View 1 (tube, rainbow, N blue to C red):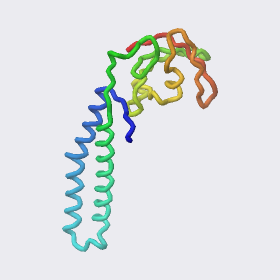
View 2: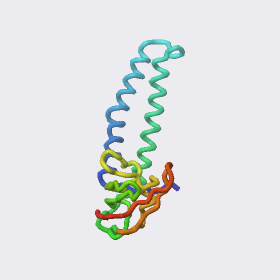
View 3: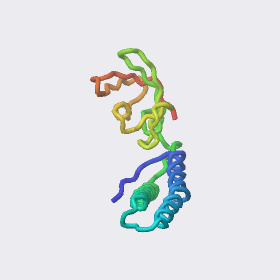
View 4: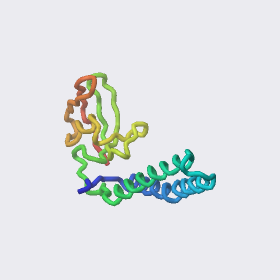
Length: 157
C-alpha cells in the first residue's frame, strides 16, 4: 500500500508540471539521442548508445515514480484546519528564548520545503517540536546543538 502524501495545490501543480516536462521534453530528447547513436553503426561498442539507453531507463523510472506519487497525492483543505494550534500549513512566529531571535515559518509538506522563503518541512526537528503547540507555549526542541526553547508568539493560516 502506497503512503498518501499531502500537498498544497501549488505543490501538486509543480509536481504535475515536472512530470509534463519529463514526458514532453526530456523523453523525446533522449529518443533522439538513441536514434543518433544507433545511426553511427555497431551498437556493441557504441558508448553513446549505451549512455543514452541508461539515461532513458533512469528517466522512465523517474516518470513512473512521479506518476505514482501524483496518484497518491491529496490536497490539503486549508479552510478546514484549526488555527488555534500549530499544524501543517500553519504560519508560526516563534522566539528563540536563548538569543531572543524571532522567526516566522510556514510548515509545509517535505517536498515543498524551502528555508529561503520561510517554508519549513513538517518533518524537520523544529517543525515536529512545534506541532500541536498553542500561542504562549514553550517548545523545547532537540537540535544537533542541544535543546532550544522556542516560545510560540503567533499562529496564522
